[in-house]
Each structure stands twice: as C-alpha cells, then as structure tokens.
Image (cartoon, rainbow, N blue to C red; front, top):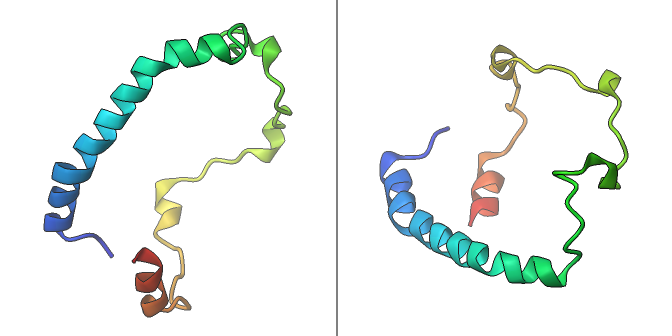
Length: 86
C-alpha cells in the first residue's frame, strides 16, 4: 500500500528539516575529521586506493520496473508488517 498524504506531509515538515540540519552540521565538521582520519585516503578520486573486491559484470543484471509489478506478496501477514513499523 501507499502512505496517506498527511503522513508524507507531516514527515516532510518535521523529519526532513531535522535531517538537513544534522547533515549540515556533519558537513561543517568533516574537514577536521578527515584531517585526523587518513587524510590521503580518497578512493573516490584515486581508484587504486580502493580495497573492496571488484564485482564481476556477469553477476549484474537489469531489473525493469515492469517486473516489479509481478511480485507476489500474498503470503505476507499484514499485521506483522505493521508491528515492524512501530
């Protein structure tokens, strides 16, 4: 199902500004944090610094939005979904 409009609107009014404020404060402190934590490690600029294993292209597949319409969720219990959200 979808969320009621009032839930989305309330979330945007209350949660989004708090998240943006925390993100802004974190961004202000990042240069000092990076100076103290491996300042020369920048794998987003220098791929040779990346220590993650490479992903084989053969393991990737495209998933088209149309295929998402055919997901069978009839075996799921709605009550347990609501409990996990609270």
